[in-house]
Length: 207
Image (cartoon, rainbow, N blue to C red; front, side):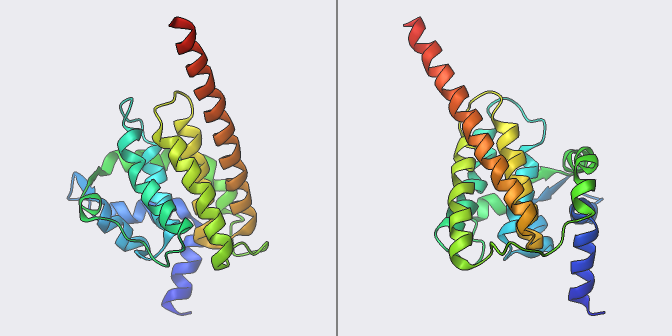
């Protein structure tokens, strides 16, 4: 078995384990640079990059933090929508430090949710991964990242979860999981629209 096959098999067995491995490499550090995490997972992979930043947005962060933490997702999904073939992030984002223990805690909390998917996730049809299809996927993911960016209550976690599931499908080229994630993206957009509309109506009623 080649090294690439071994890495593929490891990722297929457990995506959460791959994320934990990326962070646990730096046990001596209190925080891990995002650029190092992305490099370990494959710097050219949009799927891994979106997966990592979506996981960060699933962390219990202070209210309003999503306005900052959603920016990398806007850049990544925007690049996908524009047809970029590899990830390009500015240095100040790559240098940003992620608390290692917080990241591990989020991955551990996600493991019960990920286990059913991790057991079956693998490359399979439908084939959604042509250049044109990935641009369309990028457009939808960009819309959800924009929803995540907005400071609207109750919509942030759902948007981050939708991006996380979609990214898992992209990582493993699993068409079924990708479709599941895209379906969650549509739900997240509907919830954000409803919540945003309610806020606007409520604000107008107070004027």
